[in-house]
Image (cartoon, rainbow, N blue to C red; front, side, top):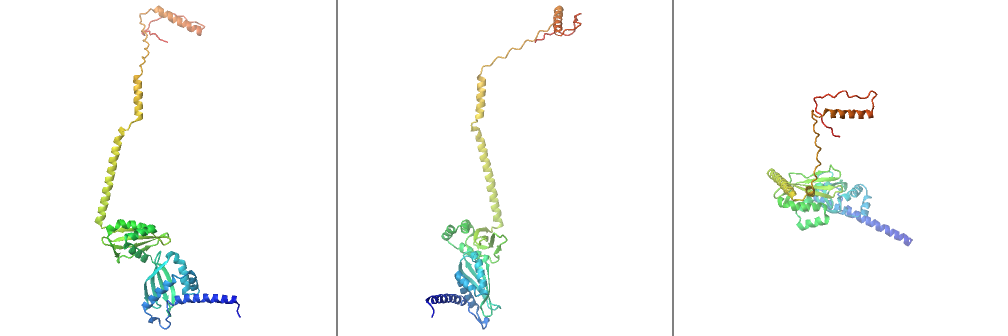
Length: 358
């Protein structure tokens, strides 16, 4: 007899086993086995089964995915690939564009899976018994860009304004650009089949996808930029104007530039001419100083000393001789000479005597 505790444990184990079994049956049943002959399977059956299988795989819980991993082989590869990439792709939306080639050996199927961030291309390979044997998943930027642009070009103004308000970023940039360009480009018609969408992932921080949409009036080049998290970050639309239109726009830009320059010059001339009406405090100060100087009484200059009257040759020579003698005597008293000074004679020269004022 088992105890109640042992019975409770057994019931728990059986419940877990049946839960795992139901999950595996649900998943494995999506891709049935054809052990006898793989060539008898139609492409439509494979496409339908692949669509159901992927829709279930990408919506199960983490615990169910871990249980699936324990099966090994294909499911182990599926588990690690999905756990590594699901943050890049975002939430699962739907499976579309499933194609299968049953004539090849082994049978292969390719599906475009739409996620919230970016679409993915999923490749499945089946073995002889039509069980999935190989799995690969890659980012499908081309499909994502064309799908998003198709949706946005066809959306109403209310939807675009709401997306721009709720999400901002890329959708806000797109809405502003589309409001400016749509009257010029006209309605969206599709993508140019002659030009292939290209992906530039040379920059590790961003990926640029270039599409070639066609509109009623023009063909254009649309560039979508993804950031390092694979989120849409920017949008630009280069309209394919003709050569004549480009030259006309260049001429218009040049004319506007020249007009702007001359208008600014005219404004500067007017402003400079108005400077004369602006009072100059320094000038007023100088004028006041000049007026004060003019009003002050003038001081008569001191009279210049009259030049000494020339001593004519006819003056009294005796007076002159006496003066010279007195000067010599005075000099002798200050610096006496042993021999003394004796005036022998006074001789008249051709020079005129002049008075020297001290």
